[in-house]
Image (tube, rainbow, N blue to C red):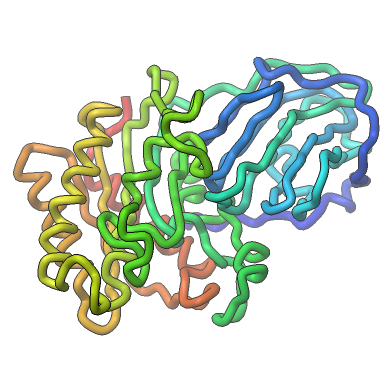
Length: 365
């Protein structure tokens, strides 16, 4: 199973935590930091809007800090794979410290738990006190990119209630426990999550923002600024080359009925969805080549429109000789915020996508 237990703290091991604007002896340079996910390097810091972005660094020392300026997002600070601090939003730059670490080398990771498509959080790097910088963590051979909506972004997956306010949603969203993150840990793969709540292939939730859809944002490093902004085109130069791309889109296209006045009927929506999905897949292949793909679907009450169409797209891709699996998310209870997948659901979803990847045979190179 893909269960991942996150320790609330390591106080039993003698770890003391402190937060505040405290001077650091050493800043870990950018060359020693591994970035996993889309982030824009700017003014000796990184900006990020997508969920699940992480920064990792290796060091030898007894204390590590993270410099943050983010009033919207929640983060996790991990040391050696264990969560030592859950960091809440706060205005202004600050340094959050983990001190009194055991002697020896350590791996620190800062993980952006939440999505913020209209706001870029700023991470200005790791800091050490009387420590020594080590080489950056290695890039894993296996790489997976996961495209999706709120289900992929882990929207409210920690929640124990269905009805959530906007604050509840943000507070209980944890991309480190999404099916995408669990999949990466199971396969020892680097994972890039490109997920945006509310967006669909051709139609967004309840017909909102009809001029935009997921493809409008997919090429952007930061969602909160135009594609033409300096450095905002996600032009991959070979440093990021996934062997597998997982796509979980369509829930927003079909989870609400077409409203009066929308530009397409329910029947036209189905045709446009299939055509739009093929266009999205073509744009992914233009970026990465003939990568293996897993397309996902699930039952949507009451008329079950998504599953047959997502399966149709997968079948049509296979008919063209592509390596494509279709995975149907089954036995999920949707007890997270506002009928979204819970932590238990994400574990099941990860297992099911993992089975889909394995059904494709040898995809790693």
